[in-house]
Image 1 (tube, rainbow, N blue to C red):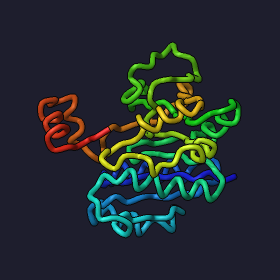
Image 2 (cartoon, rainbow, N blue to C red):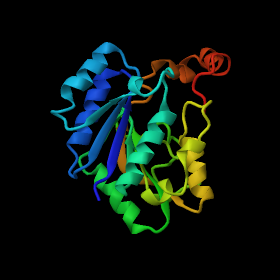
Image 3 (spheres, one colour):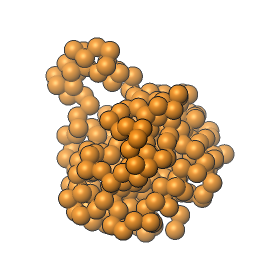
Image 4 (cartoon, rainbow, N blue to C red):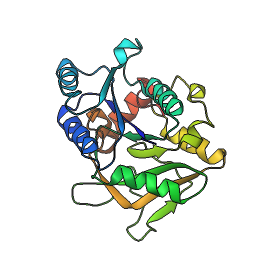
Length: 235
């Protein structure tokens, strides 16, 4: 069954171009959907102009909601419905991640090798090949396949059809921005295994679409002011 792949997009056009091309260059056939989350005109125009050539379906969230970005809950609800109707898995590739040609196929193969899997994630690295955010805690000597009780990021992650059929994303709280932590916990709570593949690296350029989040490392006072008082980056 052909998997559904999604990429939520919020500007960061140069990174988005690399992400889209890397998914399109995968060595397996996928149904690819790009969710444009109120990006600026230049980004939206690029997505419109390249959707046919790169063979992805563009979904402009402004046609579905009036809620300001980020609209990850809306994306997840729509993507879950698509995957369940198609009877297939869902793969999320974020717009600051560049995959290799065999990455998506490898996610599927690992899912097929182990029973009761809920989520399978590729590990993220920087341009020097070093493990980076959000998996900095993983050592280079860790097993190639890690059954983890820690949260998986959605950077490059497969959610199995079995798990999607077991947990209704409509139950996700509307007052959050990001849901990878909660969904990872729900997967384990339902008895599924969550796998992190140290042997499957993808290039991650953190926070490219929301550069203000880099203040968490460069200016934490400013970041946490925005997080708690302006209610940004709610997990």
